[in-house]
Amino acid sequence: MILTGKARLAGVMGWPVGHSRSPRLHGFWLREYGIDGAYVPLAVRPEHFADAIRGLALAGFRGVNVTVPHKEAALAAVDEATPVARRIGAVNTIFVADDGRLVGTNTDAFGFIENLTEGCRSWRAAAGSAVVLGAGGAARAVCAALLDAGAPSIRLLNRTLDRAHTLAADLGGPFDVVPWAERAEALRGAALIVNTTTLGMTGAEPLHLDLSCLERSAVVTDIVYAPLETALLKAAAARGNPVVDGLGMLLHQARPGFAGWFGVEPRVTPELRAFVLSE
Ligand code: ATR
Image (cartoon, rainbow, N blue to C red; front, side, top):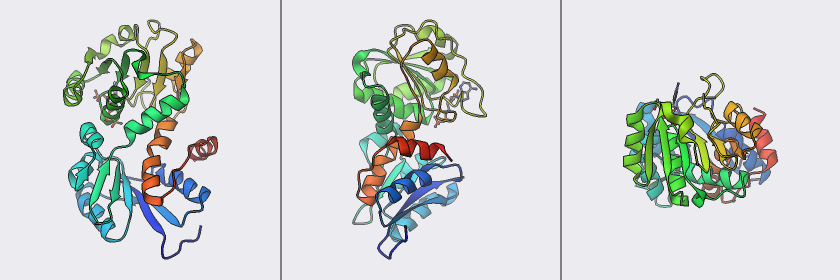
């Protein structure tokens, strides 16, 4: 696509940013929809973050995604944050309003639910208790999403128990914080299992989780998408549980930003999945 002087501009700010798949993802959509626009990687050091987003707005950018390590700083730096961003405590998408104000939101919860409902049509949040492994930033978005979708309760497990208590207290709601060592037993009767830890990711330690207490009807999902089929998903699928991989969360969380900056509601298609994976 050759840009004109009227091209719409957006990007992703991170430090480092070279690992981000977002430029490829948005680039695919820009090409697919023939949009006069660009989405660029922006390597911004933490100490320059607040100045950089103000500068982008002044330079005519329509907004940016924000990734590690800027998501919490972004919440503090925007002029206005949506309720979901405040609840999660992090901003991953910024829109520059017509008057130049920076409006921050968080689309990770949206992306998580969209991926889950698309990957398993029969899944209903109200069907039963969810088990969430991990208590980092991703877990905050997942827990907020599940509570908002109507999950009756969440069993929250984390290696560092205090972090799980803090998450439960911050979000509020029907949490049951369970020690990490009791994770196999905690699966009993659950309708959904979500791994939000980095365990199982290429290069990280494996996730050791005995699934023998898990009902066969329970849906199992992992937000790790490299590898696409994690050992957790493989083991769950082998015993007949419905499984949903994590790539769709990345793809779906990008939709609201793209729509706001470029004016087209983009679709998540098998071609997009293949393209993003082919990196
Ligand atoms: P993110 O923002 O992607 O959630 P994070 O905030 O670094 O990333 O959280 C990583 C999660 O993986 C945490 O729940 C972390 O547990 P701790 O809070 O105890 O650090 C979990 N995690 C990482 N390595 C782990 C390991 N070896 N065993 C158990 N949990 C681990």
